[in-house]
Image (cartoon, rainbow, N blue to C red; front, side, top):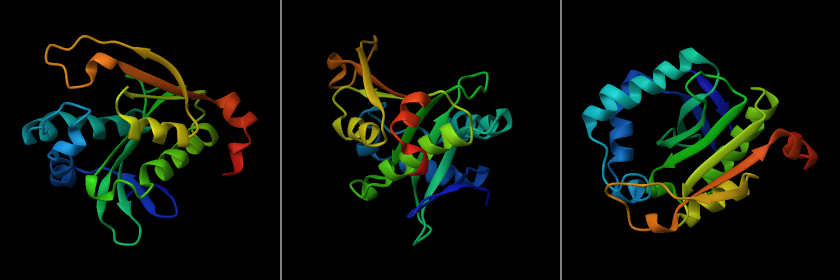
Length: 188
């Protein structure tokens, strides 16, 4: 197991080809997918597109997506990410997280996100960490705020088959390295 990062309660490790079932279970929960696609991700898409892309990202650089496990039990609870753009550069990284509904409300997304933001600025050389979600996804927005990101804008995208709440738009949050340093977060 190639551990990327540990927090008080989580271990973030690289995904492997054997993680298909973990991702199928995670993306198969309608509650988890509510603000994403609204439906489960097909196993074939995970096997042939999603997991190969995650593994390919590891070859492009130090940023990517990591499987999250509870330290106390070893249970797979989802994933957290600092997603680079297609070129693999780390100047601007997209913060992301997707956790099993069974662990929602425990603060794992916030704990992992704070650790990833710190890593982005102290170890990866990022200048900006950003994230986005549906405007109506209040829980995700709260995680972004607790991780230190600030609201930037609301924008509207066109979807052929929009999810409930799409009419309220998407929101973007960000944290810039200079602001992170000015807030004294370096030691946290």
